[in-house]
Image (cartoon, rainbow, N blue to C red; front, top):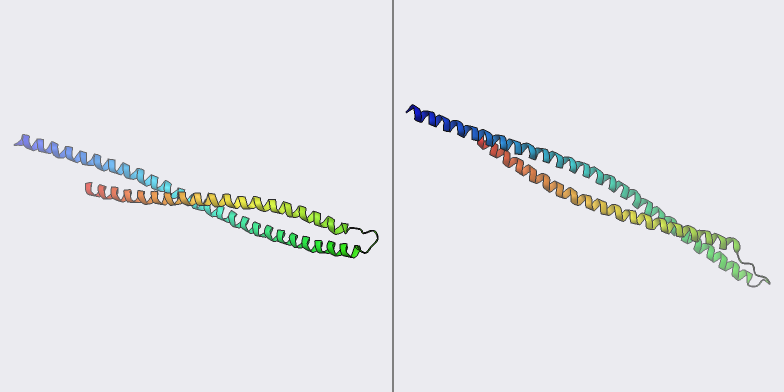
Length: 169
C-alpha cells in the first residue's frame, strides 16, 4: 500500500507542478497584456494631445482666413469707390479741350488690384492648409478610436486572464 501512496504522491506533485506552470504561463500572458495596454493608453494620451494642438492650429488658421477675407472685401470696396472717382473725373473732363485721365486714382486702383491678387493667393494657401489640417485631425481621430477599441480589448483579456489565474490559484 505504501507503493500506491508513493505513486499517488508523485501524481499529486506532478499535478501541482502542472498547475504552477499554468499559473506562471497565465501570469506571463497577463504581464504582456498589461504592458500592451499601458502602451496603448500612452499612445491614446499622446494622440489626443497632438490632435488638440492641431485643432488649435486650425482655429488660428480659420481666424486668419476670416481676417484675410475681410481685408479682401475692404480692398474691393476701395477699388469700387476709386473707380467711381475715375468715372466722375472722366465725365467732368469730357467738356475740356484736352482731357487728362485721373492718373492718381488709376494708379491707386492698379496697386489695390495687385494687393487683392496677393491676398487671394494668401487665402488659397491658408484654405489648403485648413483642408490639410482637417485631414490630419480626422486621420488622428480614426487612429484614436481604433486605439480605444484596442484598449477595451486588452482590458477584456486582462479581466479574463485574472479570472483564469484565480481559478488555478
